[in-house]
Image (tube, rainbow, N blue to C red; front, top):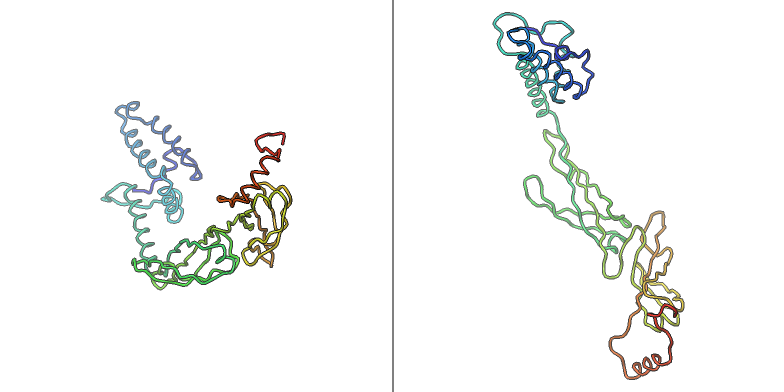
Length: 295
């Protein structure tokens, strides 16, 4: 028995062909040697078996690669791979048997060779202040046996939102003396009651009284690490933003983003008698009406 050239059986001159080209060649060959068109032709019957056998092997990418590898490494063109009487099984079964033997050899080698453990990924949440200053944080993770262990993670100051920390050797255990995998921890910087992070800019609310907004004023506003004094222009509106350069989150090289203060004009819920009198007087003398587009 000879090791059959499946490409030649399908009418292909080379093995450098795509799966689609193999399918087209198979349809053409199968049509040519179809039993209905070759009634009583035993040669055609054997030929169609070879065609189906060839297509079964070459139409699957993984099987094609194995066939090409065995053919190129072990057999030359027209050289007999198997010969003699009494041999049983088709070329396909012998070929697949060879591939299976190769697979078993590869598995045996893999069992003996050192293999690095798999990497593990997880996430932890932190506040803007914690990420700004940096800190050590304890987290609990489970090993491959499902047992929990506590490790300390050093979060460097100024770490960026979404950035990952790599802990070498804290992943899954290696096999056959191989190194452990690594642990990758994604940092999620969460907003709090005062601050919200957008890129390297920090957003906060600037609460003003109606008279501060109308008359203009100076006010202290809290940043991540201190307070700063800002000027509020006369007639500022709710929703307007005041940008304070260099008071945001850390960028690197000693630089920082901006602090963005969003104005919110607050009205007192409870008025004293005097305040109520002043507002009533203002209501009478003022022509301002925000619902009138001309004002």
